[in-house]
Length: 456
Image (cartoon, rainbow, N blue to C red):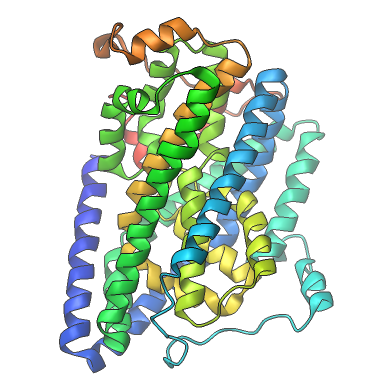
C-alpha cells in the first residue's frame, strides 16, 4: 500500500505541474497571484529543517561510533564515504558552474522573491552561530545554530553512560519528525502548482527552459558520475564491470524507480552483495552505513540546485561561498537519506545557513524535485553497491572469482530463497554499545516507502 500511495502522489505532482504551467501561460497575472500557495508549502518545508538536521546529525555521530568499533573495515568504509561525498558535491558544483541553468530566469526583479536579512560581517556571522540557549537552537530557525548544538550533543552522548538510551529517544523523535514530513509532502502537488504557476506567469517560457536545463544537466551528471567515476574506480580496484553490476541489480533499480527511494531496496542489496561474494561482515557494516553517509546523487542535487536558485535570483554564489556550502552539505546531506522531502529540506537548510535571501527560492525547485528524486535515488543506490564491492576488495573480504561469475550470470540470484535480514522491534531500546548489525533498523523509517517494502 505504501508504494501505491507514493505513486499516487507522484502522479498528482505531475498533474499539478502541468496545470501550473498552463495557468502561467494562459493567465499570467492570475498565476502570479498564486505564489502564496507555493510560499506556504516552502514555509512548511523550512519548518522541518531544524528538527531534521538535529535528529539526523545526533544519530549520525552515534553510527560513526558504532562503525568505528569494528576497526579496519569501518575505517575504510567511512573514509571512502567521506571522499566520495566530497567528490560528488564537487562534481555538482563544477557542472552547475559550467551550464548556469538558472542564469536566464532573472527573477531578482520579481516582487514576490525578496530575501531576508543576513549578518553584516564575519564577526556577527560567527557570533550568530552560538544560540541563546541549548534548546532555542532548534526553535530559532537558524540552521547553523542547530548544527552546532547537534554536533555537541552527539559527541557528548558518545562518552555518556546510558547514551544509547538517549540515542533511542532521539531516534523515536526522528521517526515522528519524518512522519510529519511525510504528511507535509502530500501537500506537494498544491505547492508545486502555485510555485510553477507564479514562476511561469512572471517569466513565460524562460522558466520552463531553465527548469528543463537543470533537469537534463542533473540526469546527465548522475549518469556520468556512475558510469565514469564509479565505473573506472570499480574496474581499477576489482576488475569488475559497472555495466554488469547495473544489470545484476536491475530488479532493484526498477523497485527504486517505482518508489523514488533507495531505501526500498536495502534488504535486497544486502542479500545480493553477499551472493556476489562480499563477506557478511563487510556487507553488514558498509550497506546500512552507506545509506546515511554515502549519498552521491543527493550530493550532486544539493549543489546543482543551490547554484540554479542563486543564478535564477541574480545572486550568484562566490567561490568562497560555494566552498563553504560544499563543506556544510557534506555534513547536512547525511540527513537526506531515504525520506521523501528530506532532500528538499536539506537544500533549504543549506541556503538558509549561507544565503538566507536564497531560501525562498526553493519554491522554484518544488515543481521538479519529484522528477529529480528518481535520479538521486538510483545514483545513491549505485554508489552504495560499488562502495560495498570496493570495501570488500580493500579489506580482503571479496571473493573475486565468485563476483565475476555472478555478474557474468553463471550463478543467478535465487529470488525464492532471498532472506530479509531480521531486525529488533523498533520500540525496544538498544543496549549501550549496539552492534553494527542493528544499523539497518535505524534507516528504515516507518514514514518512508522502505517501511512497507521489506519483502521483494
